Image (cartoon, rainbow, N blue to C red; front, side, top):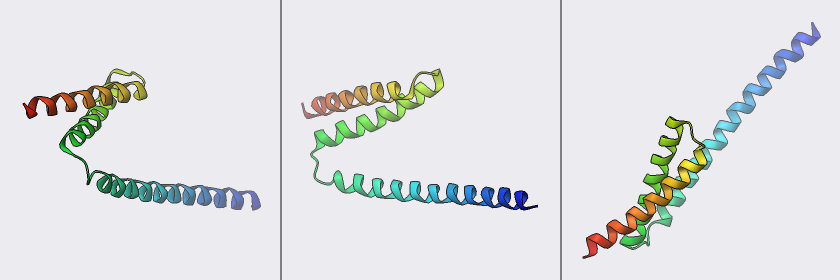
Length: 96
């Protein structure tokens, strides 16, 4: 009887920890979003295009790596590099 009580109590504690973990993740994501918005305020057009190209490239690289089964870190790095270079080239082309 006592063993069943401890097992049920343990399950509730694990469930509470999962809920607390999700709260921490949500708070972290909100803080990261706020910091990214304020961090981009003073950028010139070249910096903005390189950063947005890198972000878009990262997302595309992650998606492609997930689809083909490659390591996600490699896909994200390759996509970020390609996107950042693409953003820089696009800015240079539009300046002329």
